[in-house]
Image 1 (cartoon, rainbow, N blue to C red):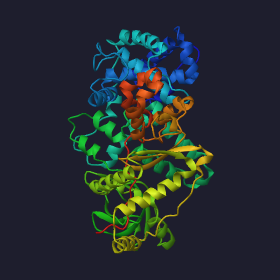
Image 2: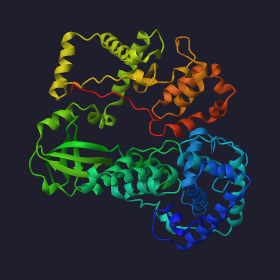
Image 3: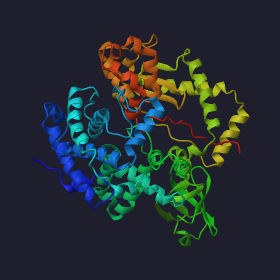
Image 4: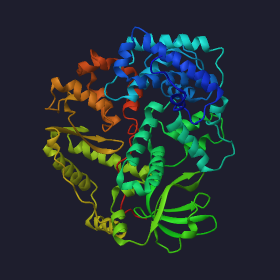
Length: 536
């Protein structure tokens, strides 16, 4: 067979490097799958989307699904379970009357082909109902059904997705998260490719040559904590919590792993159990367990500046990522205290009730300012003025006395916050028109080149000829919020041919699943509010 799959290609889908006896069996099956998907009447269509090496990867990917079901490693079943909890059905798109959980299904193979093709390449979006997907999946199912009673379980593979019920070491939990996100077959076309691309960029960057391993470690840890998968927009810890089993005592501990805080800290002392640190930008204090930190003996002077990452596991803060320290530096401290990005690292620790109370007040003020509508359409050159005038309107609506206003400013200055520099952007270089949307979950958003997705009475810039292009951007562009996409669907779909006569009609039944797929890292909208000068 031309371009035969060899053992190393198969092992790329595994969290281990040396093959086992069962790997030889599944390698043989992978080559049979490769033959089936390459020689049916629809194979030319499939090959139009995938390069020869990607055809090999697809064969290994589908065979790994079969191995997963046989070996009960619980990856695919976790997806099915999560999807069913969200949408009351096992899979999106397909007819499921004859679907059998925990066994192989034609619908599984169809879906996995759709997912693989739309994740491994991003140039074209492939609809799930194409005939070539069904016909190819049927050929693959013939092989899987023939092997169902004889295929061996891979017990060695299963061990990589298990953890002791009494484990207390954060790094053991993090190792499973890493395996799930970066070394499992299910996320091979997605997050595994993302980490490979990022690591290649770091390795080829001459500016980090002397400390390349440090940058690789920090990038992997940062990506592990932040990244969501295209399947259901879940994080590594959420997948791991389901894969280890619903009754596992550590499931809640996995789910409660905190966001990772990476940045500059002051060293504030230590005792036998903890190193005391203070986040410079926000002033928040943390006890870092010495179980995770071997550098305590090198720290002596109070207010030494540390750069590090930390995460909370089982109520303790653990070192996570890279570490270096430097002497007191007044300029760096001032920059950190005035960095909204650095302050935002700890936003998740703030009182959510306070955040949403502010958002509710801002939303009401926006509606009052914009004639009752949460969305404004305007020339892009007027966006900055619109936002500035709205902000002034909101501040006036708070009816703060000059004394209260000055007290808040004094508290902010006492924290070291003196304000950030306004940076004007020439939006009209990108698009002549724009929209400003108040997202109740995050705040003000500005979007260019999307006005023709909204045939609304207050939108003078709607152009039918641009409508489909702008709708696709609103739906698929990760920088456009889920809330704006749903505002378009909820308020405009009846006036848009895309959703009534076009391809968009078939998306509506599974639109939430698709929005998670398209906007994976931004599906879960976070408030864009960072507090300064709060009363203690």
